Picture (cartoon, rainbow, N blue to C red):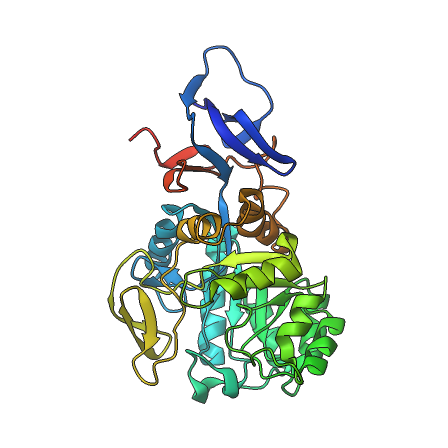
Length: 380
């Protein structure tokens, strides 16, 4: 009965709340509602059981880039994040030439079809040169709907999200195009005004790409995109909770104003996540990682993060003092819903994939299960 496991004694976080001294029963690849005599039982008293993390914005890890790496390198990056509890990951691309991006989309769509990744996210090239961050300005372009359609088609049904500066020419029409094709239109790397952001939301945008970062600051006379994105119930806001991208007060403001049901904790990770300091390439741009902070060699802009979601979880539950249920909602359930995979992942419910993370009392990662198999064995 090796395929039948009972994880018992833990604080189990369910959509309905926390069950003390609870248990999760796994049979094969799935969570089930009952167990058979003789099942393998693992005592996890004092630990937390939470759903596997879902990262909808991730550029790589383990020294591997999703934008430019080989298939084996991409799989290495995916595995690196699985070791840190992210059992579902979207591969994000940075800005590149259109032909290059369409070629990469075709290549990685095969990994999505095989279930290794949960789809593709194009962060650029349709972003503002005023808010380009760690993107090559020479490769940026306006969001012409015809170009947006090329990327969608190249992804063969695996495009999950496109980040746009919706104030640029073609931006609103591109939002409508994405919405019609079931692809998330995300507002980000934008110089939009409050009014322009509202227009994009009304056209169908549903996500704020790493809220606060790469957009105008909140102002009392010109509130800009942040106010529009926080106040609208149709928008889910991404947050990078690594202690570098956001002040704790900014994170608290987002959770307070949007509510846990409208927050998605992401990594925006680049190659160095789970790998270490050094020099890396982010698309065509060189990045130096020092003390786990990634910055462009030229200009010094923050260049993604080295974050893993287990660290984001611990920080949210300890330093930020958020309720564990809220953290689980933001790190698992909400992104799973946005990606259209909540029927399979994002919560610990019978019938769903047995994607489970074990945390100790201090929220340190101790075990990771994906589809019923231990990637990180809590007994070791």
